[in-house]
Image (cartoon, rainbow, N blue to C red; front, side, top):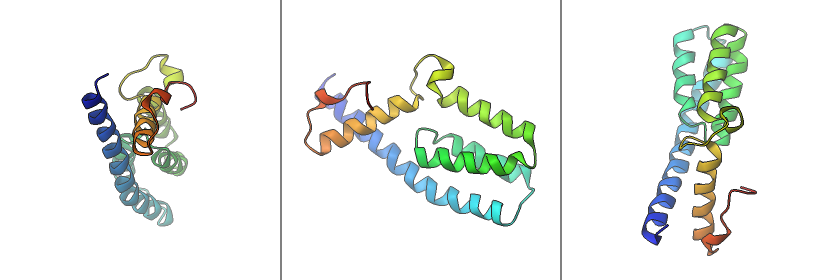
Length: 131
């Protein structure tokens, strides 16, 4: 991989991580409000779940997704199960049995490569194992 391409990919991974942090702040407040008010607005809850699903590469967003699913399960178990299956289809490598650009471990490798580059580590230390 050329240095320019690696820099571009690393920059993209950093931007994705930054965007996930910003999204978390907004979504966390919305999820808190839904749970605290015991909202039964399925449309609003499902829009939140749809949006959070886009950030399934970020552990904090996954935790937020799980939290909202636990709440939504008390209202609509079938719809919640559908969202869990959608998450697995999009993000869970072990269930899919293959890797694509949406694979969390791939995104995490990009993020770690950016950190290693930033911290002065050689990029040769970036591998599939242990990341």
